[in-house]
Image (cartoon, rainbow, N blue to C red; front, side, top):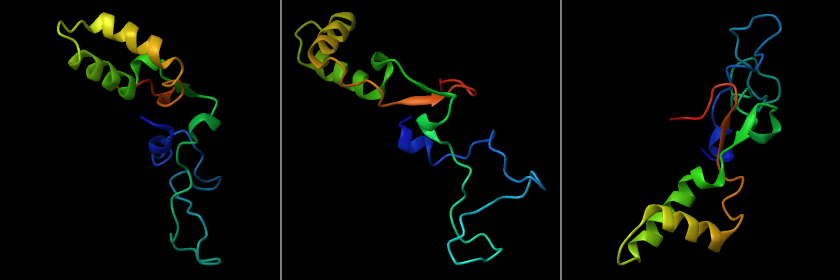
Length: 108
């Protein structure tokens, strides 16, 4: 998933409350209310977390889509040849665009 997508997910490893671990904390968006009025603040931090891991560029959805597009242009499509061609043409374009929580592991 992209880092922006990850930041919308709740992190089960965040400490929600020092007094009650089941109590949720929300951003104070209305000037002091005790009711949950703002967004939940214990979401994934993405690459700001020590456990965030980046996918290898060749494993990202964007890279695989580029490989599929390349294969559609070939008279005799070959996945391995297309992977090599796209990687040679794009260089580091697909670096650090998708990642995952290192504690939870990559989605399968």
